[in-house]
Image 1: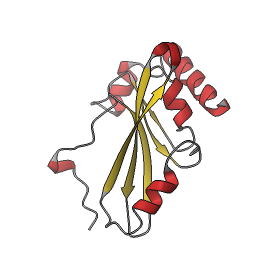
Image 2: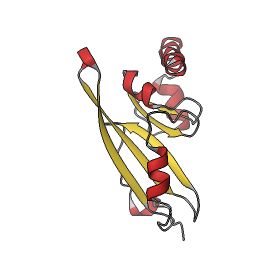
Image 3: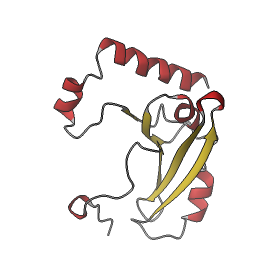
Image 4: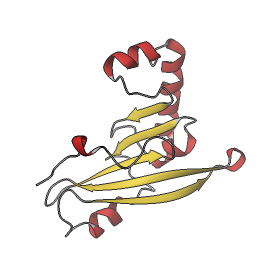
Length: 136
């Protein structure tokens, strides 16, 4: 939970300083929605998704406790590259109500599965055909 607390503090501090202002973000990503935080594999975790007040999308690599990484690896072992498996869980947050978090496993190559995590409302799981990645 320490890493998640630090990450939450960093997001709040960046918002206060203006590092995540609309102008700065629009220059690098014109389709960005200001209330979505994107995280790399160092910060992403189930704890962060549970306690962060904004929407979150991230890659799971090192902070995989409470994440279904082993299940996704075993289940997708023989799957063809380019396939994905989306799992949904509901976390109980006490006073703030329930929060829905998705775990996504993407079969990148014959042996490698990539892991993602995102909260409900942070995005969608489909893309336009012209942006689709062809793994073959």
